Length: 489
Image 1: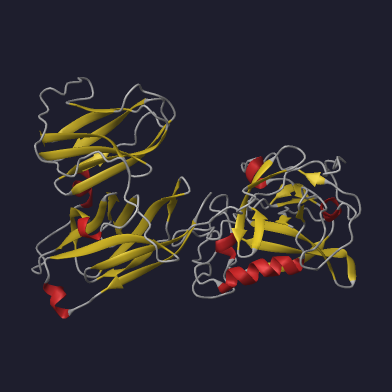
Image 2: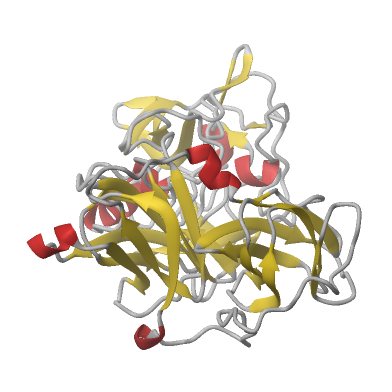
């Protein structure tokens, strides 16, 4: 269901003459790995040097930044700038049909209020000819549940909040009040302008490069300011975030966000175990994987797996860390190696031939099959971090639950690029030791069906750490408690 983004290419044509230009124009577009157009739902642009942020909501695809005068007289007051147009987070959120947002306006001017859904479709709009400085309240009612964006524009400034509706408010409507106490829209004169406010039935299937919409910002900008851009696109019904583009902006140019659309396995989008648990799948190269940790307490033959309270290298047990904040659907159960194998002999073939704890038609991957996965991911430029083919942990790691750790290619650091480019979504479920459960948020370890040569009480597994860029083929005693991912036969 989810896609993962890959790389972003920034193309800028720099010329000496541009150093004296009065504005810099940055155009945004999206592509997939086959260079096909991908519509952007929104773009966030941040000036890291001066501390401001603008959000462009589709169909806005162009950001125009005016260069400060060379005499250096222009000054920047971050508090005043942000106070000129500010939206509070809607309350309540999530809401059941009706919610409220406080709008602060710092200067007079025409105001556009737009509600869009996650696909970029304009649901409802209001356009006020002249709104005077002050505090206003916006009441939003929505007839359908879903994720929405409220955007307000005035005098080149833009403010946006994300809203989650769970109910039916009867109709789609936006009302702006003069104050938080009095509702009255009759004296708020509709504007004849606000040309960008219009309802559309859907988004274009092809790029409309000759109809790009512009969003000019009044925020200060100087050539060489450090800018950060991040794109969002709706793929497989969900809005996904791109990796971040950061760099000094000296000239006009184009930012191309490249998205890799992660697909479930074509013939097996889900798989159900004997306990009725349903797991999503993901196709990575030639392999079809479960993209969730196993959480069964029985084998396919109906035999139960005992709940473990102590360690064993010979008796099968499963372990449940129900004290962690990670939900069971994400963390799954931990198992010792005997539980994983269900009496089957070890294997390092492709395929392993070991059904073990897995559902019918699926098997426990051998270490050689884990190597097929890691080798494939290492071979894809969109999946490696920093251009190093060994740095693939981020591409396999889930986007959530990892402890923070500074390091651009670590699963614990998503400040530069998000995790989970492959869709494998490895969750750091941690371990179970003699003193109890520990290490959740730190490690994601997955059993293989392969013994360690010459050491019959040790088996191989694939591991990822929050502070390490590699995905490691490692070994551990068979009494260890690790997660399980099954592979399609």
